[in-house]
Length: 83
Image (cartoon, rainbow, N blue to C red):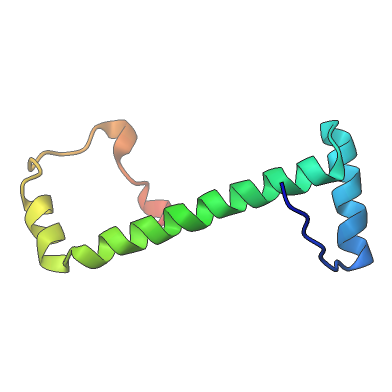
């Protein structure tokens, strides 16, 4: 474990304290959990961007061309009023 000192606006500190209390954990545990979740999102985004950079629009179109040419089921059709 290591210590990280940060400066927060009072309003954020107060929200963190309230949310940690509501979760039944200490501020340190709450902040560690929130940071872990944010890191996971950032890493997933980075992974998707790296994978996307390996592809091309032509590859996507070729894959879509392999899809069967059938009408969607009724529940999958778009309502034209919402378009």
